[in-house]
Amino acid sequence: MERRGRKTLITIIITLVALLVLAVVFGFLKLTGKLERNGESTQRKEKGEVSEETRFAVNTTEAVLGPIADYLQFSGELVTASSVDIYADIQGILAQLMVSLGEDVRSDQVIAKIDPSRPGLSYALSPVKARVSGTITALPLNRGDTVNFQTSVATIGDLRRLQVVAAIPERFISRIRLGMQAEVQLEAWPGYTIPLIVSEISPVVDAASRTMEIKMDIPPGETRAKAGMYAEIRLTTDEKDLVVKVPSDTVLRRLGEIFVYVVQGDKAIKRNVVPGITLGDVVEIIEGLEAGEKVVYQGQTLLEDGVNVNIVRSVQAIDG
Image (tube, rainbow, N blue to C red):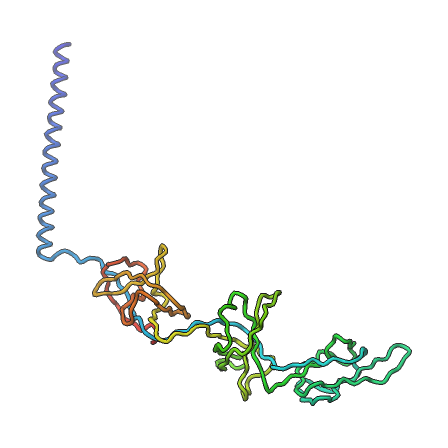
């Protein structure tokens, strides 16, 4: 038994020694191979055989210097500048309507007659006269309708002077002032624009709609404009002459930073900027960029500060 135990111990020792020798030999061979590979890599670097760093393909555009304007857009309606509702002096039935829509009338002209008769009684017809000269712009009643003191028989307006009326939401009131320039397009005349100026601003805000009314005079002789027309209004709220502008797509926002990538040599440099007025797809840059600098226009979303870039194409995205 003692001899058998010694043989087992000797076998274990020989096995451990053999494993240790194998581990040493394997480690030596691995180290030698790594050194050889490092040597080959060094030789390739010396010969200029190493591949270039990754380059990102981008399109660029130049920051330009020019004017920019900010505006608000609303809908409105063309109305007569002066309009008078005509009421009857007596209650009854509308017996005669002596004018038609669009007809010109003079002051004191009889435009309708009211029958004040009641069952069992008969009275002479009572005339309704125009209080001002102008054009009939509304006839809300028909013959046979009941007329009272609160019912308008007709509306007379002065078509020689038209105005555009618009309701401005309360949140924009601080940006509205007299003399502001505006452009109006009429739905009946696509592409035709009438330049206007804000001539009246209501001193109160409508409590129900939370809007404030503004008015703009239509220039005399503007024959295309008709009372009752629908109008699209673009109201210029801010104008600047010489500002640095870039396409809005070039401006990135990440983690609270606002920046663009400027190409210098073959590298994309991250540049923090301060934007100003945004008009459509154009944005003003107040700080951080100069006119004439190349800005990455397409391909910027994958860039990081200082990476190599390859300019595929330079485009003129906006005019000065």
